Image: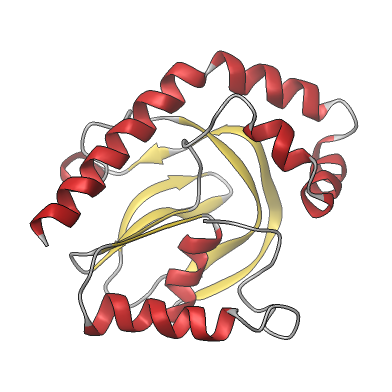
Amino acid sequence: MGGPMDVWDTDACPWLVPEKGAIRRWVQTLKKPFLGLCLGHQLLADSLDGTCERADRPEIGILDVQLTEAARDDPLLVGVDLSPKCLQWHSVSVTTPPTGALLLASSPDCQWQAMRVGRNAWGLQFHVELQESTVEEWSEVPAYADALKKAKGGSALAEMKRDASALMPAFNRNARIIFDNFTEVMRRS
């Protein structure tokens, strides 16, 4: 899933080193289904010869993502809205995908919003797996609160909560589709 740390924060978060090794083994050697969200998306890229870098401009807020033509038939994203609104709260992006990665979604500030690596591994930079409490809970994480205030100003939290609440049915629908699709991928593997 996610967290305020970055993929390169191995001194402060030494568990990232074995985590990356486990992802690499799970995806490349064992060929097991993998789904990484936000930091998990970045860890997938970093574990498999991709590169993550600090973004020129952080993506924070309820923003648009555009699925690619390849996503229409992708086992994970088939059935998801082609231009979903998503919660974004990141300042690091995948800038070089792993070898052979297929681009599944982009946004103006982050080309690699979603990708598939091989036939069994997916990374999504964005979030649709929200609950009514998600924005409020995440805003209590000091690093997230600081990033929000710096990027959007002091009134941004109220606006994000309002927008997320209004879009909750669409978030839930897309999250359910992704969950069901990934469950089917796991069943078939």
